[in-house]
Image 1: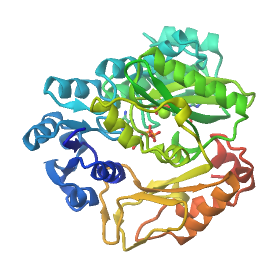
Image 2 (image 1 turned 90 degrees about the horizontal axis):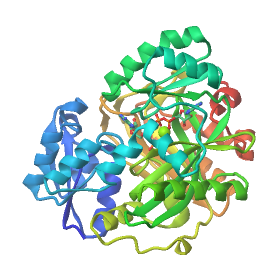
Image 3 (image 1 turned 90 degrees about the vertical axis):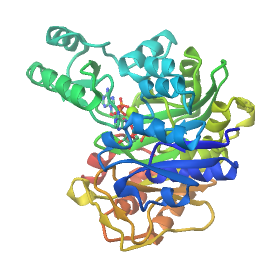
Length: 445
Ligand code: ADP
Ligand code: ADP
Ligand code: MG
């Protein structure tokens, strides 16, 4: 096992990684930007290195500074968390060039799977269905022709996109003509790659994803699936495991996820995202080649520590588990605690936390870097923590979540907590009939 690792991230996920590392006797170095100097991760890590000012591209995305921090402190490996450099194959390759282990898949498989175009290709080769759509579109004429064949409405996606950004719905030929150049320009700006793909735009479906772990030598195990259908602006708010899909469909999706990951000899933790339509058809959407925000619900039902598994795989200890060892029990739900105002279109609500009190009790887990007196810097995403519950079944998990949300106190800023309390009371939610347009159709938002 590693003696020391560097964590190239911030917030709750930096803390999450530190916690497991401590339990494993692995020393931690955390990087931070100037406004994050008072963060819990900096306080709890063994060492910390300031890598730059607030702007992400001068600090958390500053490759020379991050690599220097690892080299100076003698860290053998870098855990990238999620977001930031977690899906950057160039960074993974530079780590390798400097003799530092990147805790994640190889740069080669990140390149293959990292783009939406590449992912669709591999899925097709693995015999996994994809949403009707295209590879990379060379020009507007090609896009117009493809849209005619697929049928409007269509969705333009940045092939390198992520975080729910870089998508444009086009309902008519005119909209496509207008959006195509704009989408390409935005993709170039945000993802340094103008490449666009097209998919049929589906109005109503569930987002279901499969958690996998591979050893890079052909073994790929799954830790069940998650339903992440409650979203705003294509970003997840509430996730649960298992999904409420019929068991045969669940098994088919799980098998498809494993098949796809095996196709690339996947190493490390990964997630395969699927669309499941109201007729029970499923389509592969994309693979996230990293630990995911919502990994905790799968940890709760499998009682496995995914960060530990990541460290074991990356350090060469391999994956000792077999599929039969993984027994999924009960039901887990996660609510993302966001510093946002749900009544004002989820506008970010940065500021000082005047009073913070988190819930407790059997089956309640809080992963958060927030504390009373902490100021949320406006420069990063709005996630200030996650509330996770685990109970024997879905009904009890909902009741537990409601109770835990009602105990939660976060004063000084607006949060998504009041909205989640209302969702736990919603009859459609209780029945498990939830599609990605839930907030619009069931909560009138
Ligand atoms: P998850 O399913 O883990 O929530 P997301 O796609 O929502 O996956 O991304 C997780 C985090 O990473 C979010 O904080 C999001 O803002 C960020 N993120 C994901 N992809 C990118 C990207 N390409 N560029 C910048 N941030 C990203
Ligand atoms: P990202 O990399 O930004 O996470 P995804 O391809 O995973 O991009 O899509 C993010 C979200 O956008 C999905 O969870 C879903 O809500 C929505 N979405 C993706 N593909 C489609 C589609 N073809 N039609 C309608 N909505 C879609
Ligand atoms: Mg996605």
